[in-house]
Length: 515
Length: 111
Image (cartoon, rainbow over all chains, first blue to last red; front, side, top):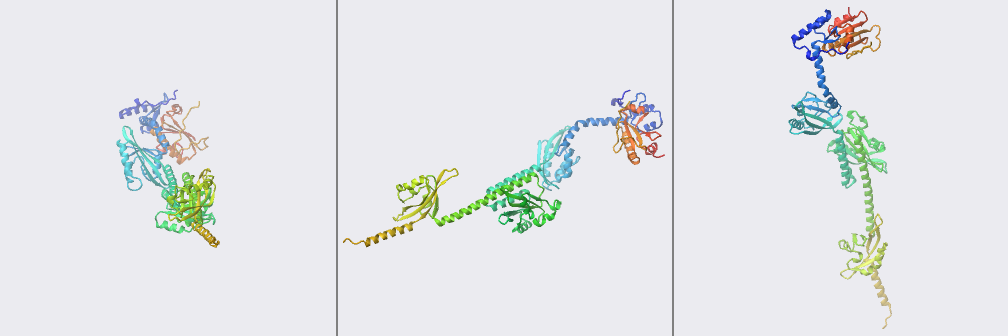
């Protein structure tokens, strides 16, 4: 016997009330009677088993139900794969009809609508997306009218695509989404495929990259360590939306962190907070700043109202709800700590930690270089002071012994001197030929000390000078010129001359007369 | 001859996997695919089993479109039909099992 199912073909299926009645009579002839007959007459039977063949003969209602189900399955089958693919995508996607009604949405869209505020909120299948857009008009960062206008343009064929980036505020913090609308045809009618891609990670990365560039610019253009710190703290606060930041410098000699610089948004509360911070000192390991200084690792305190941390760990020190503290490092050593306070502090991701380390390292190198420059500047000032005490002017020459710089109260003006050699100076004595020995010393790159020469003033008087110098070499050892000092010895020389003349007169007076 | 059969427990129905306990009720429900009365019969039986048997029953669901000879061999004339095999006496209920008292009487739960 056959085991194949006995379904009456659809083309022989009875239709119409009269035909159905006749069919039921035929069926009833198969059934002897009793409860089966009563059940058939009550419409509670789906099929009758033919005692001759064993086949099941479907009653009209059951046959219609089966045919409809099979037709529905055959229609849905080609779309099942598409729906499965759409549901597997992480990007929320929905299809809108020409009126803006959501015809279909994938799993990600449905999840997005329940967890986010913004353009996706409450726009479930069957709801009108354009109407929902109108709710966002003027109520936040999302321009619902612009979105609706863009969707209408796509639906009308005015444009093929529409793109709109917007921000959403959710319990997890601020996020960014990219709304994309693309036109398509479904069953001969224009529809719009709307996708809401979460671009928060990318946006945060862009912001942090921008912050790193901003910090680099601040450091490049800073004229002092204080100005650099203020501009860097401000850049970080403005990028991250934090209220204020403070820099605590590690005092190596005392072994404590001292308040150094700060910046905050213009607010009475923030100013009061920063005012209290001035004069603050932390020992390593004490307080947030001290702990970061000791560990060399960033520390984050989230908004205590969200229950992320114990408020007692935060409140005594910052007075704010959240804090971000990270070290400023140079040569693998902590030289200071940057502490930011705000209620907007969120849990850092890897990219944020990377940016924080990069900024701490950049700032550390800058501050260390600045400290070295300050030390050099102080050294130069000391050197200048000593030079001023021991000589009248300082000079530098190029490799051809021409003056490139003359600093101090030179007897001959700087403007007249630059580009000339010592023996080219106006009214110099000895004349050019008299410098031969000195020039041979210079050619041999010898140092010289108290080389004396004179110039003749218009009144015929001489002015006397003594110069000392030594050769200068660049990093590669190449000779680049001379530098040295000069002293006006006119008074001494004139006194010596007067003394010699006086001695000569005395000797002349004391000599016996020949007369 | 071992015949293939379709065990199709309805949602919520727990057919006992091993030999039924001595007091377990053993039933066979003959249906026709997803015919409206067959679907209704499964739903009605689910309610009855949940209320009166908990897990103490064994149910086999046979789709006559897939196994027509099984129904013929078991003397089933129409679907849906519920056959109680044990405990004896055996009984059969035809229809979508919407008459609850009739079903309870056939299953020996009420007299």
